[in-house]
Length: 462
Ligand code: ATP
Ligand code: MG
Image 1 (cartoon, rainbow, N blue to C red):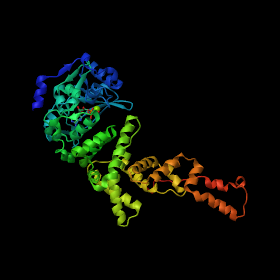
Image 2 (image 1 turned 180 degrees about the vertical axis):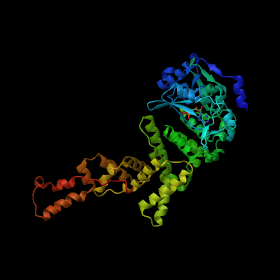
Image 3 (image 1 turned 90 degrees about the vertical axis):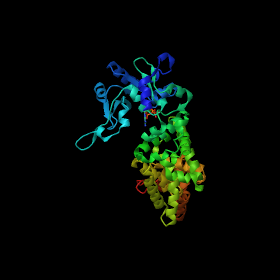
Image 4 (image 1 turned 30 degrees about the vertical axis):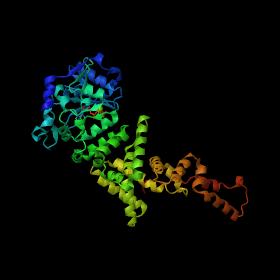
């Protein structure tokens, strides 16, 4: 293999501390603790991957990954707060409260080149115990995906080791696959999505030989386990660069691999409001991430699937289903089909369906039961979706305004808003009973009526 030969023969270009800007002050305390303890125990210890890349770019890294020549069991001996995870690729997770530092042992390129069954170690039940061939840093580097992700920061002398020209590529704003691009995408098709994600996040261009097979190899994503694609989709859409990622995914056709029904609808004549809805939602998501506000996968998937679900629900309604039933059936159908591509866990699909059904219930603005909606656990998310829909012409703006206004009112005003006849009714009744008493003397009855009804537990009908 050309890449293995290049690496082991030429060795790294070592960039000493004074010649780069990666400073310990920017590395998390916990990652430093792990690096120092490994070093003090006589092991090699490097910060690697996105941590080095982002620090070189003057950005705040999402996490700090560590690579070492210590084997996972050695790492566990050094850290009491450590768990070994992964079967095929064993990794050590060192825990500091909720913060986890991931420590990977250098791997030889061998296990990637020969993913042969005989290399597996299994127990009596056939469970894979081990499939790890450890190696040296000069081998480990060639298994990494992009040159920009293949830099090692050495805690021993604070230098950066660059085997692949990663520093140059980072300076030039280029995502370049290590090795022969088509082979590397075939080895792991998720790299297609990673190329897009890093290009979107860093504003890099994908170098031309790494870019040219990207579109035509999109079909390889079909063989990736849907659960892994789910993780990747969250990174693409909730990482703060959703709009740019989405546009690139559409450009390369990968969006259609991930969300075929959505993609087809967006391309159709009926796609207009849904295109705008999705874009608007992704812009909001990016804004929220930038402002350190929380973002939820439930909202993301609701927006993504809303179009196909609506279209299917309309068909089912034509066949005689009630609106709520049609929507629920449609959500199930569209959801099931989607699971074959991107596995969305039930903890997301259940509230997603609630949010969708609430779109119907939010259409009702009269009667005191309407007020119960305000306390529904999904109200906020459903209201946000309604507002977005109103913004793009998929819902009546007056409806969104109604719900916006209702939230600003006090209890009495809310009742008056949703039940304008209610008061009149009690006055009429009083008159009929011959009670000409002024308001102040009214029996507490009318006041009692004005109190919102105790809510029945909601959700069960959603
Ligand atoms: P970020 O954490 O900002 O998303 P990252 O580059 O750190 O970006 P991780 O998924 O945390 O990405 O992976 C850490 C490193 O592991 C990468 O930088 C890369 O060197 C290597 N890596 C991760 N996934 C792959 C893959 N699919 N193929 C090859 N190398 C990979
Ligand atoms: Mg990382």
